[in-house]
Image (cartoon, rainbow, N blue to C red; front, side, top):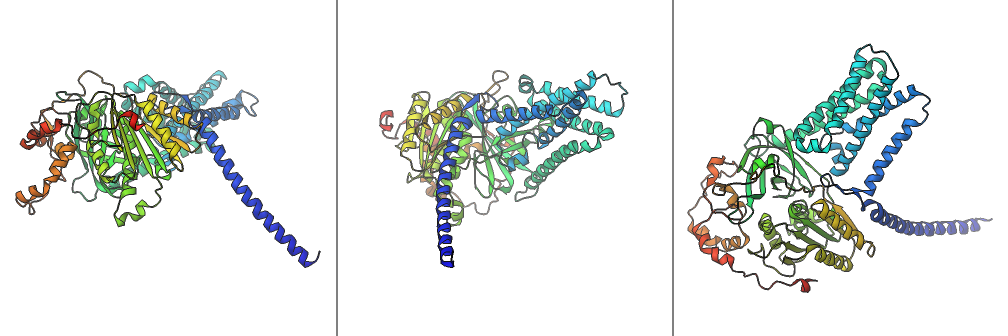
Length: 621
């Protein structure tokens, strides 16, 4: 062929290559999206085991755990010729599998950095630990059965010590034991784990020094994780803007109803010493260091429900439901003078990458979804030019929120925050909020009801939610993400609804928050009761009833004129006063707040329903 023919062939080859590349990219995109949808619908989302306390186990989780067990069984049996080979292989496999168990304690900074959810981390830790214990006990049993004489040297004593520590870990890890003494279990578990790996190191050094690298790596990872955590804790809890030695906290209480003493929830406000960048879905461990020696070294995880500034938060808010642990002791307190934080940790669901977001919560589960609502609302509707980069990358057009209350009094938990969100979205561009009450109406709703802010009483929530959710998916462009937070049974119901809708719509995804509420248990009757004639003064200013807040705001200018100037006075809001300085006489209300003469005159006005006609369920659907 001459030069022109080679040129023609080259042009044809280049054109064919471009066509093949384009066809391949389009087909691969379709195949990848189709494969992803099939995997989500049939593997990642369907439940294999529904657990009440430790999160549900999906088919994907079960497949990963099963694969890990099968691979270990295959490695244990491949190339084994006699008992001596099995003894060596079982000990080596146990030493290797021990390494990922020391990536961290209750929370691993390495797992958090890799984006591994807390539920997945716990599940992997539990099953890897069980496999290690089985392999170690098999190793010891085979050695004992071989009839090897006992010399009681350091190697044999350390081997028995390591195996005994692992056996005790297995015994103490039984669920009913953990449930009875969880904090004690954590400390004993860490001590036994350290004994096991240190004894393993002493066992390997005399005879198999090459394999001693495995316990050395395990201890090094544990030490590195501890050093990183301590360094971050020192940075955020020492020094900083505020003069106090550590952070401080104030506690506001929510009650069951008029004349009731039972505390249904608490709002803990922690004042930080240094600004902290917060992402939705994060949680921190709180060391309440002025609650006695026993509590000083106990860390308790709480999900961050609200904060004052996303990029430089100085105040964190936690919505906590009292249980049997330290939260039951906080019921009787109004403040904590010294708080140390460890965190934040947690996996962001990145809901801002979806055009439509549907959030469904039940009871205290709203605490796990409210951070996403706040984050996307502030990010989308912020008009400050300084936050232009903060708004960039958000593609969410619509957020539908469904909150199923377990009792009508729970609306007081979010009353002021709901009002703030409604005022932020005053043009009704982003949010649609539906609140389901189990009983008939007895008090005003947090905000006036309309088509975007709906309050439904004595209605079955799940059928209405399913109907509204399917209609929203049907008419919404782009992808839709459904996220839920509630009891295990409630989350399983929402999961089933999403799987059912995926049969008709392929642009739907599902997620559960890392925070998963558990049923409230009382160790004895009255543990969550508090006398309402002794309530802190500071809790009054933080959360007022929305109707009263609006009236007080309208008269704020007149109040400022009538008040004498206080410009020369030094503010003392940074220091939390002691409990004795807080206590004032109050009336028995749904929330802890003072009753002034002005408020007393307004009580009758609060009982009048001025919220207008509310849309019926049929009109909503």
